[in-house]
Image 1 (cartoon, rainbow, N blue to C red):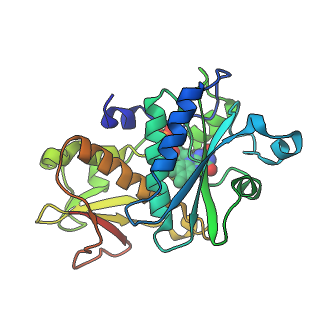
Image 2 (cartoon, rainbow, N blue to C red):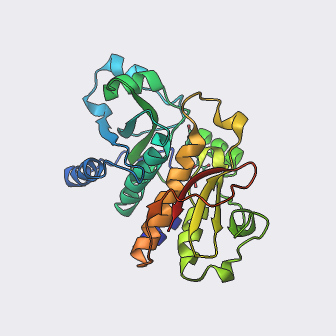
Length: 277
Ligand SMILES: Cc1cc2nc3c(=O)[nH]c(=O)nc-3n(C[C@H](O)[C@H](O)[C@H](O)COP(=O)(O)O)c2cc1C
């Protein structure tokens, strides 16, 4: 499958099958996590595959997800040092791992809020200055969703995405970029649109300038994004958008790379993140 197909296939899985993940698959995931240790802003992301099967009862009792995730034996934990661009890099790297896992038939679910952070952080053995913004379970999806999983999906309206005209723009934020005007970047943009985001808020906005550069902005919901203090989930969402855009752009041999050449104007209410140039 292409990256574009994998991005279309991925959904959040909250109920896992008993089927064990084979050693060679675990090894492949582990190697991928180790190799992918930096995001586009060059922050080092440290990821760890945690096997709950290796833990004692007391440790297991502490490592909860408030009953949101069922049946998962493995988790990937992603830690990073606190900097201005840490969360975007963390989103980018962990989403690349999630797409890799999808290619191996495995399910995942971004967790930024509904997990016991202190207990998982202690299993991660954080270094000084590091934080643990998010984790994901990893395993084969169960055939059926759990009741809590269905409730969350319904609450977040997870099956829906905003239309193109609310997300992508030409030169200024008032002029929508139609799908028919996107040319070779159509699939890369669609991959951004389909990405997962915290509470499915889809805070990414992209403006293409007259040189063909794509400027990535965050339309932040300040109240929502600051609920978790330093763990500002919507910056992770933008890292996920960057991962999807790049995975498809590279596979479709489109030119470009990341820069921070900000446009002359930032539309009001938006936060500039990066440019694909
Ligand atoms: C940064 C981030 C944090 C998330 N945190 C949680 C969480 O704490 N608990 C949860 O059940 N889902 C969480 N999600 C999953 C979203 O609700 C889900 O991605 C969104 O509703 C879209 O659904 P989909 O992933 O099935 O396409 C999170 C997603 C992202 C990207």
